[in-house]
Length: 86
Image (cartoon, rainbow, N blue to C red; front, side, top):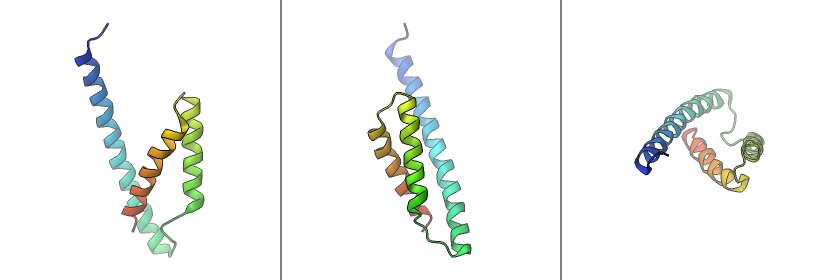
């Protein structure tokens, strides 16, 4: 059995990966925002937001995670990414 310190290091590594992935998501969303500006499209796309939230809820259920909690997390991520498109 691993000790708590080793397991915490693994959690820290996962957290670091989550942050790197969020940075990548923000970069992609900025690029999308630039394209939306060039094409005269609005930043906020409720249809896409609904699709994203539906998809992550379904994935959460498949992965035995609480879909309500995952949706709350993703709402914050979507809001953060929308703000960088402004």
